[in-house]
Length: 156
Image (cartoon, rainbow, N blue to C red):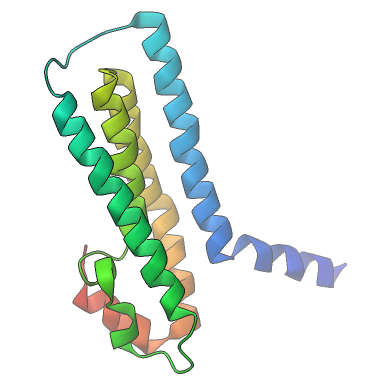
């Protein structure tokens, strides 16, 4: 019984599990925003679709760049602070979250949906302040001083 409980705790404390929950919040709030848009249909943006497409391409680039760079860390045997500061991770500790935020924001702008924009912003703050703190705690425990020094270098 104790082993099952310990295994359950380990699964909950998995970085990928936390990220999956974070992405689920985006998806759930996106669906709420989409539903409210169908019900009420408020249109507040006009002529800003090019801005939405800019964010769409920016988001796609950030996500691909972050995923490619993140895979490179798996190849490192002895992790040092410099290993974390690669690609978009030199500018922010959560580039995939920023990419997802810009992706959904761009969709809201392109489709002229104020509800999707609002709920995307809410999802970002929930993800940032609820899930990313757990995510960073796990990484600090896993990588120790190297990750803590990285957190001091990259604040955003």
